[in-house]
Image 1 (tube, rainbow, N blue to C red):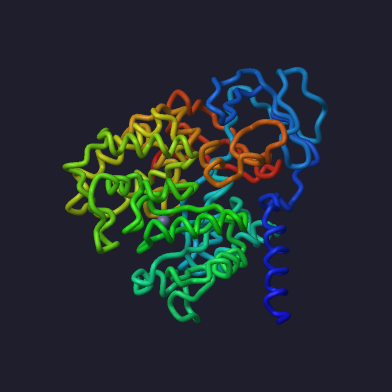
Image 2: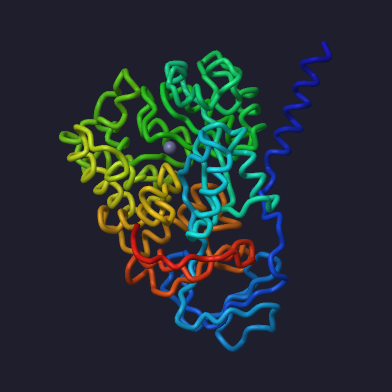
Length: 436
Ligand SMILES: [Zn+2]
């Protein structure tokens, strides 16, 4: 019986390989770069630090020193009257589904608009993976691309979007879009997902609490993150939190903690907003357990409020998701900003992440600093990238944006981009002429 032995050996090697660090930047920047005498907003939430100099070496932040104490460098950027923030991170995008060249162009413009990393939460990972590779190889300029492979119960696999992203496969059998049931061999299924180059599994719909827990355990054992819609029917939000999911997407779906699950997963955006207050004890308990277990919330406020056609729930849903996001932030839940899209020229000439941050402030009532942290340290934390991204501290990847006004005074100032630096290399910037 040699085969089972080999399988066990293979799994052991696979599990050992699963503790690799996340992908590192492949391209060296300028050997050294100094941004001299800038106001540093480092992404940790700390108060802005005026007259700081950022020292960048080999694509990483080497040091932060008082202006005047910086070492000589190959390139010095005068930071006077500028504000340095970490490169922004969109923790919820979808890149695939259109022509590769359109996605590449959107990535190029997203980077120029200040976004230096994105998290693709499911699609056709053949295309998404190749875009991620092309960025690493320098074939296109773009943010670093991290992505998820999807798992859901069989009822989901008649959705036209999932069929389009699985061309060439029987529905539910593509490694990046797998139908799972209690009978699924999850060791193989998670290994197949991991083989796409994904760093996470995304749970979409039609899964119960027991199966969610088994997927979570196996995903984490193989070194993958787990992201889920905030309800996946019949599993409730608290079932997902208890299972150890790392990030819940769509604040509006948290309402299902307060009512019975719908038998129809397509009703997920139509919860009982009228009878389950965002500050009810059930929701507050849920948010506290998210905080205690380190589960991030990716609220996607803008897309529900303004980014799609109003529906019969919009009038109640928008204030509800704003209120629950504010409660989550106040209670100390990590907020990870995401757009559920990324870039749409017909709506905005800059990446939609700027709109999401504006909605976090104007809609949910977060402070501009809290909003900024949600697209820097918060998003990096939700993606498992704390050690490499999200803040401008020594050792972190040198992805940063220089603005000519402070985003702490007005979050709309994230649009006032002077320079974008990726991996320690100046990759450009844009001068917005105003919104749209
Ligand atoms: Zn999405």
